[in-house]
Image (cartoon, rainbow, N blue to C red; front, side, top):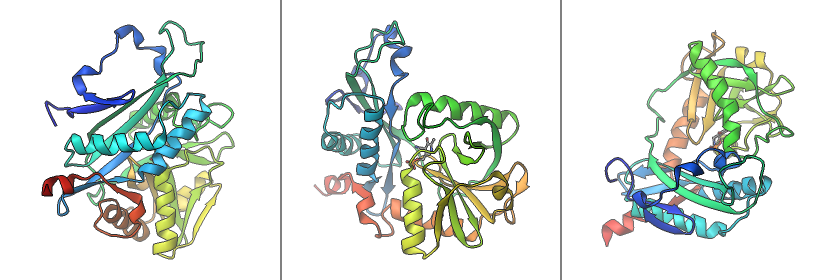
Length: 316
Ligand code: PMP
């Protein structure tokens, strides 16, 4: 890291010094209305001197799907983008937990109108430090938002479109103004969808339950990992179904999950205490397992980790 930012980023086909990637100020504004992105994490393992990117191919597959839905042209093959990310994290010498953000945006806008929808795309990939909060005791007080989650025929939540985040931001600001840490949004059927930037899971009677992918949620990669860990590694029954608001009030455990949220236990919803108001046993097990798997301490699910090659570099 140099002067608070990494040395390199990747822009339109090549890795370049951070300071060289500039645009004219008039390109701001409308340019990102149709933009889509991914949020990916790399976890540093100090004992192994290696950084592992979590589920990189799955994130880049979703990146491609998001581009398709918003009709952005895929100028670069997914494999090239994957290689670019691995190289970028390695050459930025990211010996810390790192957030990686690929962004695809309209390259043929004139900056003056919101109406056009050309398909030429530009791609930026940049990284910054983002320490994990797993196993650090983070807890959140949640509320049900008065804002409704966007829906598939309005602004599809399945797509990681920047514009979608206005919905979650409004909910987040309302939650903060009312003294809560996180907002849970209901969908247009009045059922539980997700947080503004994370999915939601609850435990009832020993089962892990999460809103299904038709509940107006992002098809979260962390959610998928947690469901698989619960089923395959812990033998816990997992149910994807519609979830009602009052189920959260009587749930034994509730947590948010996602790349940024990782696993964040929720200890109250609308000031109803969840369980005994402490970290629940299933959440605790999943949190520890996710931490160890992401960081390469637990060698299960090796295909979820892409080593960036810092270890080999150190040896050389
Ligand atoms: N829902 C929303 C709205 C999100 O922004 C995110 C974060 N990308 C998630 C869920 C979690 O998705 P993932 O596990 O793929 O990061």
